[in-house]
Length: 502
Image (cartoon, rainbow, N blue to C red; front, top):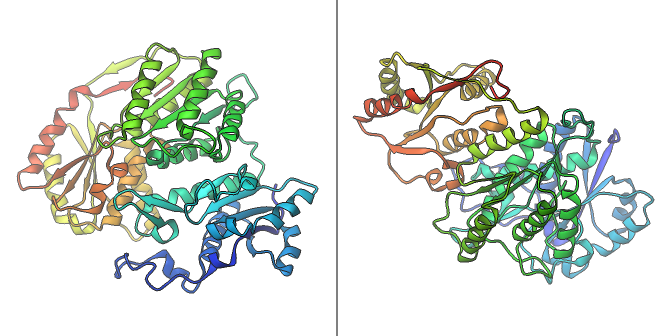
């Protein structure tokens, strides 16, 4: 396990810790609070280290210290006390070979010390030092496809909650490296933990991969590869082949982008791993594969379209392979069902179709209370509906627990987003995306989001609204929407109590 007084060394180039310019966060709405405000006066490296330290300390439930170290004499003396190193990779860090003294020190250490790289900014293959190539890399920036610009992830966290996942994934991997991970969910009749190989995803759906990876990890399954695969053809190939030898199930995810080419290769990381997996399963045909393709391919790159068409043709007659082009929620349910077939002997489900009552959960903010009341009244006129309302008490924890439990119990969700704050709407949409990870076994029958029809930022985010029917509210809609939901009633089916998937 970890030591009582754990120290992590954050190795950096001095220029990366200068104070941000006053205009660094100028694009954010001045009326909005920002995480950056909490760390006013800090340089970028100090800001990142403090944020990571706070999250990691909560996870470990132990005091932890992220110590900023450079190549000065005082810092070098502190290297020996560090149990793990984070290297802040930037153009300056690479060009001046700031990393060289640290690597020399690590070679002389008796025990192996984990090293992680965090990228402050994009750097080219020629700038990325080969000496650091084998270490896991995490981007603390993201490419804004809409305006083709590079955005600082830390300055964007408050404005776009989705980017939290990239930071959280880094912290989870640090946690894994600092602790003994012996608590895994085993395969029945086997002491070995059930191991899921999750291939690297294309850039536009990487956030979905990270959500699935983290949720399966939280359930106790062993995830391989353990860390981000380096974008180097030789290293990526070796890591992938070794990990597949231990895998019980394979998960692959593809979006509309092809991705950048690997160093010393002519394929993206997702394409290379698919080739290796295809070759591996030819010799191991009983290895289950679950493959997801985004349904949003309208703007797909031509190279990616060709790749996906080839992939579909290759997999047409292959057994033990499930290919889905649907919502992420449905894909999660498919993965969980695949895992259960590995854990328990399959049994024929005893399916009972019945005219069951359908529960409808109406989610709304205080600002939409009056409008929500019209929908509640229309829903209550249908005896077949069990209506679940949003509650608001002084106990914030109780409110949150009621919300999450309602999401697990209901059949249909109606989210009112007419007058609500856009960040509140984003948070609720993200809850819908994470439902399988919260314990829901089956997809929702339907998900509606009601808006005023005005262009809002969350409506443009396909990652958030995937599988959600966005409707414009008008005076006649409550009765019309209720009538539409009624049409779902004959389709309600339930499993008997002895069904393993119930």
